[in-house]
Amino acid sequence: MDFSVDERGYYGKFGGAYIPEMLYPNVEELRQKYLDIIYEPSFQEELDELLRDYVGRPTPLYYAKRLSEKFNTKIYLKREDLAHTGAHKINNTVGQILLAKRLGKTRIIAETGAGQHGVATATVCALAGLECIVYMGQIDTERQKPNVARMKLLGAKVIPVTSGSQTLKDATNEAIRDWISNPEDTHYIIGSVVGPHPYPDMVARFQAVISAEVRQQLLYKEGTEFPTYVVACVGGGSNAAGAFYHYLNEPAVNLVAVEAAGHGVNSGLSAATSVLGSLGIIHGSKTLLMQTEDGQIVEPHSISAGLDYPGIGPMHAHLYDSGRAKFYAITDEEAMQGVVLCSRMEGIIPAIESAHAIAALHYMQLKPDDIVVLNLSGRGDKDLQTIINYLDEQDGK
Ligand SMILES: *Cc1c(COP(=O)(O)O)cnc(C)c1O
Image (cartoon, rainbow, N blue to C red; front, side):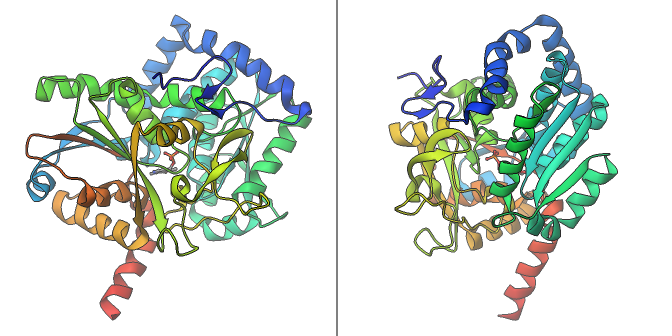
């Protein structure tokens, strides 16, 4: 079985481009040009230089000695937390800003929920000197004030969206409306492996630098490019797509995707899309999503803002459906214990998103000779207040 995207933008029965007629020219322009542009030698050269000197790549592959001892196996952390702006998201936005320039665009729009993708987009717009407009639900702008301040400092215009539930999906609708009205000069930077084709494939290719580096780094450290397991958390799925990419068609490498169970898979407050989802269309893509019987999107819940998404990208829906990847669902509480574990045993404070992947290690039957590569998607600085509140509550119990 092939796990790459096909020509029409499908992974198995998932993917495609289900978009309003008015958006067709924009998406079609991108579809026709993206591969030619990103594999042009001058593009690759410019991208490589930025990834090295601006983002700080390659990020280290760190042998986590104390965690390895605890789990009686070999655990390597891929340190995306050390990338500029503190997470993997910059790999994609750097790629897309170069693409936007090649397409002759002068204006960038993005949607953001927690603000992490908004910050990564505002960052590369400052880098490239392009106008940046970020749509964000009104409620999210209140919940995520520091990221709103960061985006503004970086020169972006943050537009609070007051329609609907005033969160991510409403911000996405506004961004799409903007793109329809400004097809000539505007590029829409989507932040994960979601949305209509070619976005999932394009974002996966930009994030694939993660597994390209892991193969080289592991060869140097272990004498093999192939770990036993690659583990990553999944919100929309971009960090996992990047960590899996160069192993998709290597069946000896076990792929492990970790979703957010929130208060528990069956609690009604969860974001475990693979288990709870069914086939439907979200953000222009046919994939698994959490929905009611009549197709209304169910509000997801996770303590980590980055995993709080009601769908998963079509690549991951296919990895789930075909059994190529094993999926785990980790609760808020287990994830917070993962934060504490990684902090105390390795001196690395992980993002709560990434801590879901750490917590999944408890459920895996790991053997001493196994090699586990865990993608540490981001650092925990942004989560400090949530972490402090959680620990205070624990102390009070
Ligand atoms: C946004 C984010 C995620 C979730 O997004 P994916 O597209 O699933 O990778 C995970 N970890 C961190 C640190 C994030 O900022």
